[in-house]
Image (cartoon, rainbow over all chains, first blue to last red; front, side, top):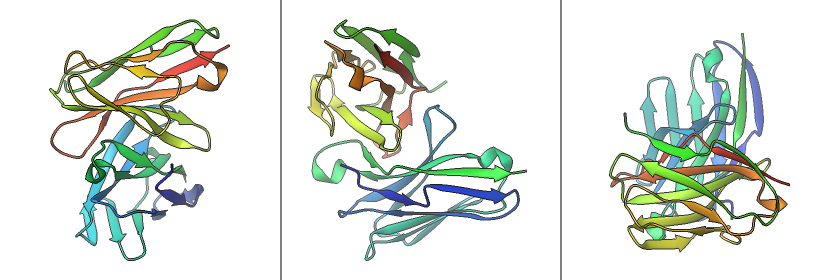
Length: 113
Length: 111
């Protein structure tokens, strides 16, 4: 079952602008992670935010988490052409005795030069 | 270099012909998973393993088998592939941290 749902499904912006992607999930979580996938390739971990954290930064990335609304957002500031990729949020199954991640369907981000 | 490798990277086969996709990691990770990625559906977990000889079903296990005889290897077996198993497959591993490391993917076409 899909835990996370990203919004929007696709986003096209100009280089230098900020890109914001949102993710909603259904059940309680230990942490929420964001991954990037360049066309058809493996996923790369970007950032993890724990359930007791509200905001986290890593370079040009800013992630927020609102557990009361079961939602998260990923902000990429000062976008670059190399940021063109699909972005997925994922929730961790390990708190429920299983392992692995439940992914959303992703946001496809296109940065126009 | 720390990595997860998968082989083959591309595979075309016919319905019913058994195949195995290998996955290997060199990070001494306990946890490994297989996912499939389909357009409009995102990634869905097929099977996972929490250590040697410990495997369990994920969200879409039907038609797949796995084994974990060694810590580094986690092969995905399709005993009788069908066209609905045409997909992009990813192996992933993690250690004590929650971050997953993904392989480069195996693109499978079942005719």
